[in-house]
Image (cartoon, rainbow, N blue to C red; front, side, top):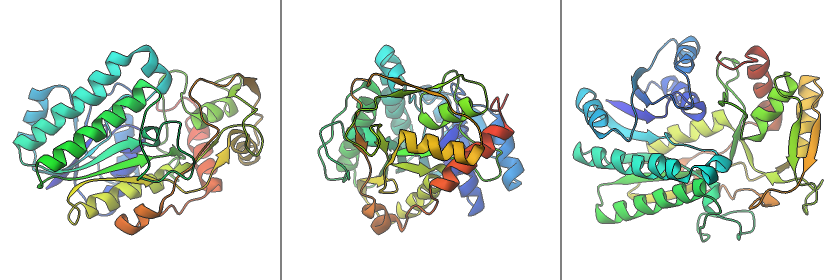
Length: 336
């Protein structure tokens, strides 16, 4: 039997496929390639000696998904597929609701039809909104400040309702904090289309000369240096959390939300300084006004992951930055 990985050729998906292959799991990847490349699958083969079965399809295409489940013996699903840029979501909300919410409903309908009722969902710390104080705990009230966060919140609501309606479902919603880093081989890493939305690929592209300067939004927060503080987690640690979550599905019923973070916060300028130290590159930056909805400090309470999944972050900031730089310097134009 195989695991279905939706969005499996993307940043987090590709790293998770590597970790699944490492423990001997068979996988089928489905991806519409809207923000990813099949070259990541070729790199997975270089790393592991094994290439995943790949199907180019959109999770919104019900017929294609039904054909996939007919053709392959799927035991569980890890669901990464979705649009993920906060700024873009405010400009294209209908695309985000269509892809992230309607697409997930289609996936769940097909899973139910084929009696595959084990799911790990790629959620986000954005579901905590801007009213909770860190450390953020799974029992805190949820809210959203943008359409992207709203889609994650809506899908979580759907998953909780689904699990209540049918006790055969076993669902884990992993609430990621800020994934960064790359595989230590330097063969796969974050490869965004166009101008990066996340801090680390922006910093690394400035360091490698693709972009002129970093924009830092706000330097007057109540933090160590005035810039925003976030909980950065190595993507390989995050990938391993998915492996542990799949294992835990056998013992958990219902829907369970679990934070995946380190429990530590790092500021934007601390990231910049560490990147300069590791890369030896200059990283010019411009201070801009705060962005609406941004919060000073966000970091996780990560005890539940240890209790339920037997997982905790192992890789520190040095590895996160050095692995990012190895990927970016070896692949200055990403997979192109």
